[in-house]
Image (cartoon, rainbow, N blue to C red; front, side, top):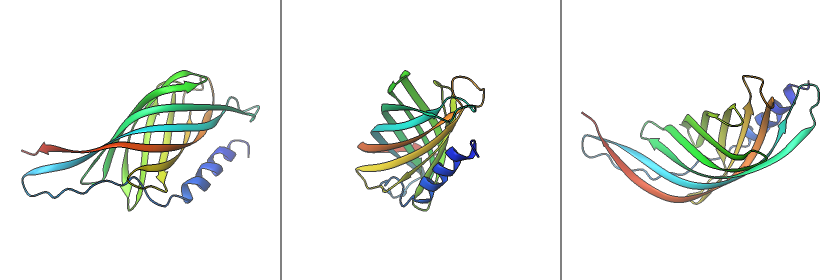
Length: 164
C-alpha cells in the first residue's frame, strides 16, 4: 500500500486531464513538415518521498523555462531548465504524444535522477496545468515525487522542415 499511494494520486490527477496544450495548425501546401514550437515558463510544487520506510513527504518547488515542439503526427519533444528547492537547479527532457486533446510526455530529469510521466490539462493558448509522477530507477536520493505545475506559454512559432 505504501508504494501504491503516489501512483494512485497521479492516476487520479491524470484522469482529470481535459485538454492538452493548444497549438496552431499550419497548412502543408508544399513538400515540408510543420512543427509547432511553444516556449513557456512553468512553476511547479510537489512532494518527494525519500525512502520506502517512511512515506513522510518532503516539499519542493521549481521555476523552469522550456520549449515544446509538436509535429504534424502529434509527436512531442520537450525540454526545460530552471531553479528548484531544495536542489537549486533542475531540468527535464522528454518525448511524448498528443492523444486527442491530451499531451503525454515521458522523460528524464538528470538531477535528482528520475524518470517521469507528465500530462497537461485545463489548457488554453496562454496557459495549462500539468501533473507528473517521477521515480528513481537507481535508488539514489529519493524513491520519487509527485508534482503539479502551472505553465504560461510565452511564444508560438512556426518552424518549417524540408522533407527530401
